[in-house]
Length: 172
Length: 298
Image (cartoon, rainbow over all chains, first blue to last red):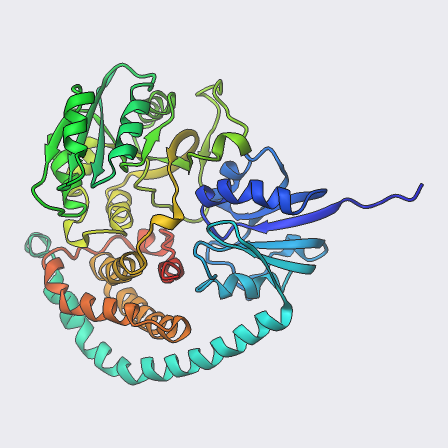
């Protein structure tokens, strides 16, 4: 009898445990016969261990947000059948960094799972299109930020000085 | 056994408050006082509390003053430890006993951040550790960065919280926990999550009003930076926030982030005299999820 590798899925923990408590039953139902792993930041490890349906918890070895520039070495050699990106709103707005990061993980299929547990497939071309749009937006944003930076450079130290705790200054 | 004061803030959530106060009666810790601060409810919440929960100390505000109302509760708390909850959250039965033991064992522990979980789903997905030994290491921390806490479930030493000024009233809503976290860490205490100290929260995504969270999170993010960071870092982070506001506004096609940024500058007088930069070690290591503040719009 031919051995069939069990199907595996990875959840990138990009939403709160409160939301995942709600999402997880829906994900288990949507992907039956899958073994679920979870990638979470270090502080979430012990809390993720509580889920009785998870196979493995992987610690993200960086403290910052999930980023394609901060890939997880432990995932390089693993291929997942499904990668799931929970998003803490309805549309996924603001989570492009996690979507882009998911491209560093070998998989055939990626899904968004939003705050009300709607699960939608998202393709590589769709992600790349969003990234391209974001790059254009970042360029424009960068120009605007650069234009205002000289004013900020001058004004902010004065503002901070006005905001200082006077009682602390008097004690120095 | 030390007295613990549970402080809840409520506003027009009669049924949730009733449920939370009912569940609080199941807490397995004898020395408790429960303070509910009502932020000007008009749905009969205060009348219900007086009628059905006479053991509760009820403080009534005449209007909604945001998180400043929490401070009115903290000021009147008699307990050695405070437990802060929302009007739709409550500690698990064994949570407070476990929390007190951790405080008593570790004098440098300033706050026990509860593992705040979804009331509707947590028990069905989790291995519930009701009989866990309190000696087992339940702390969920990171080796190289520091954490804040969730305002729907946290225990804090009352004296410490009084010294650091309780919650920043000028924030009105959101990011108040983060600001307090800076000051707790800077006072030389630690904040730790503990996996065996659980609070249940009625996580209800559909109830969130669209504009308040993104607006207040972002406005207050600027104030977090200006109040707490040394000047060079404050300049760098302000520039970064400025960029994120413009970028998120273009991506999400909304003015809300730009309005928040405008008001951060316009209303900066509200944090006048409150800037007190923390030690560099805290500024560098306290994890502040600035990107997350731009995810609440839709």
